[in-house]
Image (tube, rainbow, N blue to C red; front, side, top):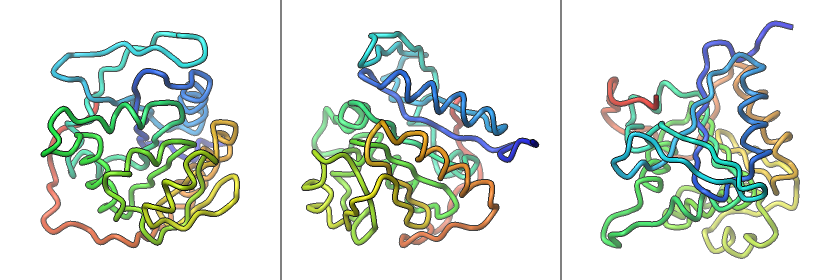
Amino acid sequence: MPATLEGKRIAVLMESDYVEDEVSYYQRRFAEEGARVDLVTRLWGNESLTFTGHEHRAPLTVSGDLERLDYGALARLSALVVPSGMVADRLRYSENLAVGAPAVELMRRAFRLPNLVKAFSCHGLLLVSAAPELVRDRAVTCHNNLVGDVRNMGACYRDEDVVVDGDLVTGRSVDQCHLLARKVIELLSDGARVESSVGEPAGVASGGGRAE
């Protein structure tokens, strides 16, 4: 079978307490379809950071810088995945409460690009808790522990394993990561323009940084 995602790029956000089997599954499964998979995080001025997994304390070094994903770099991606575990909770930290966390600002940019698929697994929607307008009135699923949070964000919770709402894909828990990955692959391989409830920004840059 020919690769269905040849030439496409998918970024996966990373931090400590990631679920090892989930992230390795995304790397393997998307690569099987021909996509390039980049792991990105907030590097805090470092060239790379090494994170440890939640289950086995497995180390994983990440050199992709999410702060370099401006509109131009995001436009070159096909999908952006926020995995399970504590990744979202760690990335939403801001040392300056007057300024949004870089990962949250990344989400604001990403949701203004309707051709970019945004996928959240399990607790991943914690990352947009500081920007609830991004998921307000959008259909989502999430871990049972997060249902109250997503409803407070104004999202429309559905008691399903995977929910697709245009350019937004959500999975109930890490146990459904294979279903979430399948939906992402289906959306990208269809070649159809996904629709978003959020408009495109004026004057999106054509250049900009990229995740290495």
